[in-house]
Length: 164
Image (cartoon, one colour):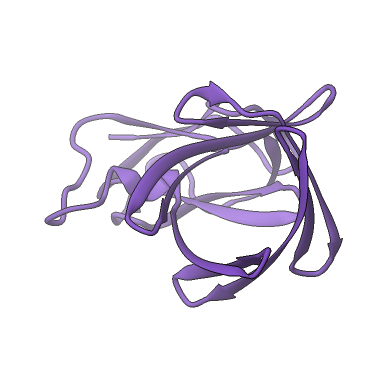
């Protein structure tokens, strides 16, 4: 899954995915060797480029407070589904293929072919890493195709629904 993270005014694109050897992390497209384990709720043991440390992470409304080694940072994380909607009410135009932002299992399909939908309306619920994510439509329109069913396993980038 990809995120845009803003820490102290510096914006980074972070991609995290589970690989065959554990978690893989990229920052701005560059691999970053990392091993992360949640040791108790909100507390993570991190091995990053050979350095070990503990991080306490607490969600505070629309941002996260991260404490480690006596330093506190505030991070804002922008979900990739919102990137296209930032700024002056931009809305996607034309035929849109709504894709899975992460691999997972389809828990529910919330629309049917031919159904009218409004911008940001939920289309599909995908469960990944024990979290349920409602995937919204980027525009107002009509559902042209629903390509998945409840119970299906989907891959990152797989088209779920087409809206025109």
